[in-house]
Image (cartoon, rainbow, N blue to C red; front, side, top):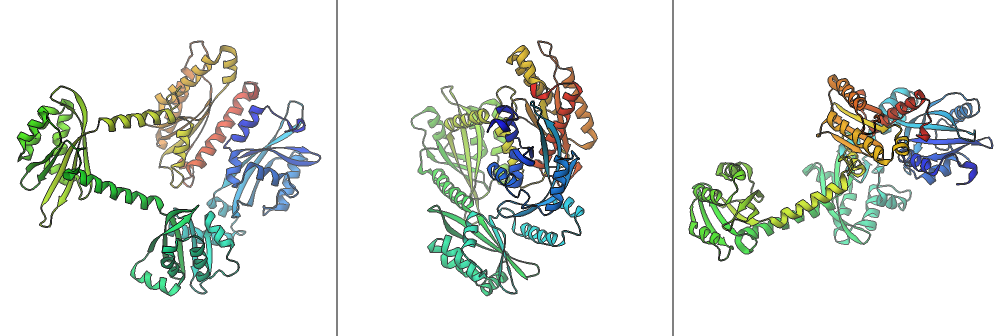
Length: 589
């Protein structure tokens, strides 16, 4: 970056560029409106890298993808030259697939230390519903296309990596969305987009040779229609080759639009296939263990549910007093054998639960054939040593319909220790050590969990940012600043409760995602503000926090990410008002 365009410090550049708020900073140079800083939020919204965005915006035609190009030129000139307000709505094609979105953009001017004027632009993607209300007459064709694609998406499910539909009239293929590999295949097809050609190209490029014939059949329209009469929807699992590795895929075909179209959905099915194979292998292994073919289980029993008879079928405990007692029991009434075991070996706090979970009635309710049912407890052996144990049941029904349970006892001290280690590592990776709140990684994973689902009813998203933290650090030291941070976290936990999702997402930035009905929202917010206002630090400093929040009942069409963006926007507006009201420069505090 040369000195001519240096408006801020490097820290400010890093902060602005990493912001998930869709914004850009521009300035006028040689009579041209130049893009200077592009945030991560804009890059995500436009599905482009920062380098691509800057190259296009500062290139010969920055508005090449905007539908209302002439109107945009006038609006930008009025804003940059005549200092008129900038508040425009426009359509723009974004990403490699040229998806049409509607954008609302506002702008205002600021001045650098050397007196140069620059402009801050804030972007917000307008939802499809709002867009259609604003541009009913202009978007009939777009709306019809979006409707068709939306209905196909709903019909085929959004988990599918590639989707196209076949027009039954001429058997031409029309893409809805394609993944990276699908786009490569499409690029090599040329002008012939018939179903036969497309499926042959796909099979040749990607399908494993042993599965090629099976997948190729779905390029035959008559064959597919006949199969759909037997099974609707139609599924077919097969193998593909990705980076020289075998990957399982599943093809789903359903009739659509009254049979006038066939929708083909290609689903990455590798995880499900391998997980199922893993479960089968584990089940076979566990059943083998329970059958007494492994020494991992201390004792293995067979219980007849109808007559409540328990019989020892293997004892792997060696030459111990506990082993002698087990051998002495050998067989008899299941409840009596279990009662003797529980009273002698199970610690008092686990006894009542063991009685409840191991009763025949409980086992009949809670176990399933070919599945394992686990009960963990703490045992005290003959020598007085405690260890964690696991009692495992497997339900088996023989040819005569008799229900039996194969059960085994095993020591799981190592399993518990490993689980505790995993929990400790998870805590270290996901919990902020200073505030004991969720950290940025935890927040990002929680946000990702909402990528394909709507926020719950009564959900409220809060965005927080401490005011004047830098001043406190400079004046009193970082210990005082840390005290402000922990004080803010304490107020949030006291008000929202431990069950709500509260995160420290940056040095002085927080986010909270809570469930709060509209009738009590104002009460919760007032309680939080009172907690902030009444907090006092050891050095007498007060707690000042900028806050923005948005509830799902404001717009039920919002995603959780939409709510985050809006809450952050309101928080920054609140922060700007705070510094203006106190006559301070927020960049210095």
